[in-house]
Image (cartoon, rainbow, N blue to C red):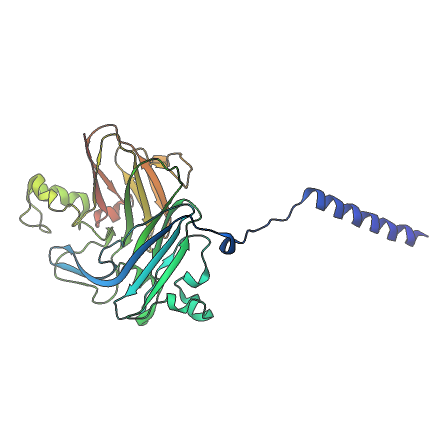
Length: 337
């Protein structure tokens, strides 16, 4: 008799548990993103993977690998709901790729070793002389990026990346307010043998492929006409000779809404600090300001900060790992009336 009660009790308990579970718990349903997505607009780009010689400093040449001849490569813009389509052509003598840091794209467009291992989208690892058309849906607003994911030539993936193969992807909401957009890639100069040649002083840390050996103190020496890195330069005119050659310089009008899209593509910790500006985080902190006006960036991290200046002037920005700034990572923001 006792056994009968126990069995009945278990049956009733199981029924109640199932009823309560069905009543209060609804399983997560994941939409079929790839099958259901109907793109409203296609953003088409052509990117050529090609060599370029970049003068890092007097007497120092970087035999770089690039997307379209620049470091960083082209910025890809899209709105949420768009499809980003990139025709990539490889004119280098090693296999290269474009690997996106975006959510919810088809595996065949991953541009990584998994494409070779699985055979799915194998061509997205592009051999010399080959090409591939990547398609990535822009499903979420944010600052994203792409980079080479190859390890061909006996090199590491990080070697391919730091040779210059990286670029930004900006995906905006439909109603994103008008802004002036600036891209800042923080990185290190590559360690690949023969990549950087010359007898001059090289910057060890760079932003957008540029760096000032000696950092801000070196700018003082240039102004005073006492620089040994940049001999012959003096005064404001001398400093201006470095604009967008040895350091990134951005210009804007007073009162403009500025968006700085900052990406640490390097292998080390970096941080971003712009003098005077309030560093309001658009994505990571949801509109709040970064404490102490410093954006911390572990390798691979990114954020967009919104700056509005209330006075004209020339303002420094740099990595706030100060030894990195001293070894090259500095730039200027010029606000004009």
